[in-house]
Amino acid sequence: MQYETFFIGLVVAVLYIEIMDIYPGGIIVPAYIALYLDQPLRALATVLIAFVSLYCYKFLSRYLILFGKRRFVMLVLLGALWTQLWFLVLPHIFPASFELKAIGWVIPGLLANNLEKQKYIPTLASLFTVAVITYFLTRLLFWAGL
Image (tube, rainbow, N blue to C red; front, side, top):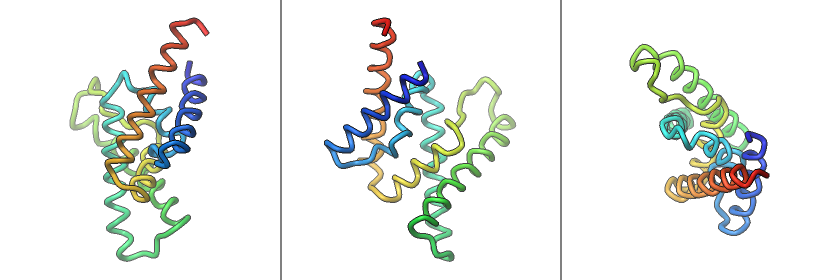
């Protein structure tokens, strides 16, 4: 079911981009969010790490020349760094059963990159719109037995 979710997510994201001209946090990010919509704290943690990465990038961009490819690489690296720190520090703060973990290492950085290029509200709204559509289409196909 994971492959189907990625494929459906890619198709829905591309169609959404063509119709609305807004990137939903990247092309693959909504599919990953859709995989974890039954664990909303993981989606929340991913968005939080994306915002922390974005604000660290904005701070660093005052002192470093970050644009284009450098911006993208810096945001992905910051997303991975904050995700790793999140994994290391979180178990010491909250119980192990608390599911406030990020989705992957690259996803927060990809989301932060799109948050930097676009406005926050349209990006997040389109991200969750595409993720919910992907989630329900995947469940519908699974229910139909396809």
